[in-house]
Length: 458
Ligand code: ACO
Image (cartoon, rainbow, N blue to C red; front, side, top):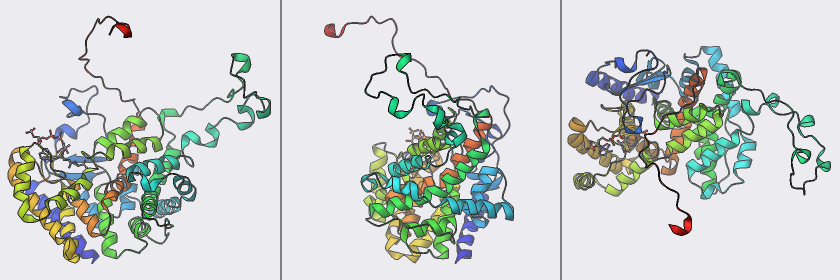
């Protein structure tokens, strides 16, 4: 079965190469001399935020490259663990490196303390992305370079008096009463990054997010979280923790391909949000928490959930034409279409589309929805493909793939985060090597010289 999925990916890759070629956009691939001139539109469209060797989205050719490797080849031959290592370290691991990396990831899947803390919150009543963000921030309690013991004030000297002698009931009245006095100087991280500790935190985040997502899912359904299985791959273990069943090789490969496809994607909104926070020398957990928040929006990672609801709303193939007519007439955006960078077919959708079809054939109850999607793609491309260069994006087929694997819509965006954490962390590590705090300007369009009017006269 594994080879079937592989050949589907290879067919999609060949179609992409034949249709679009591999023209490299020189304006986005040559080292600039800073400062640079660029034409910037609203939403920072066209702005160059930084240099990066992590990945390249070729919007003209519809190609996606991670560290020099075409994502089609990585989906065919690699697994998510290798791809994460590649993104973080800049090269594929050799056998010994892979073994060590994998052992660390497996160890970091286990989160008894974090899960216990997380279960203290009403996660069953919370939005699943909110629970994931909360869980991610709780992970920080156990491992961050900012909190390593040698960065903490020494407890014995930290407080200038023993606790019993501090008159807690007294309001502080100045120096004399300022009893809480941290005497040990905090060490400032050099170069914005304690690399050894931060890379360890990146591994921790990559390994731990699936456990949090799966635990939240189980609790939402009135079930106990399932402990990770050290014998399973990253993707198989994730599916196992979600469902309680060991996945088939096909399911494992499809989840792995989905995770690889979402792992990195240039300077997208959630990656940028992650870097903005990291650039303040906040830490990687806070930074990834911001990435999760940005990814949640329906214009970004949240679109995959909306795609499924849209397909369900359309209901059947016959309704597609009239639905599109009505939606475009009111200038509404169709979820799962369009992209800021791709002006060609999104390579990730190229792979996910045949996988969605294959799964629909294996699970006929999903065939009707797949047919609606295929028809919607056809109608949208015929109306907006040539002119506005609107094609399906990654979110269009990912929901169908997950649905056919029995995964509910509220998990679609968290799964996106489970994958994208590799790209967020890899780019953070890279950016902090030459950190400069992000600080664009806004054009002030307000008034000047107004005279203050007391409230009672307004
Ligand atoms: N449906 C219909 N028309 C669209 C769509 C769409 N999904 N996307 C863009 N267009 C049209 C716009 O109306 C606009 O037309 P106009 O020039 O006549 O005004 C033109 O195409 C350009 O669109 P913009 O909104 O300017 O493109 P932008 O780069 O700002 O937005 C975005 C990209 C946000 C992804 C947009 O296409 C969209 O909202 N898509 C739907 C949501 C979605 O699928 N998001 C997931 C993106 S992938 C990801 O984040 C993982």
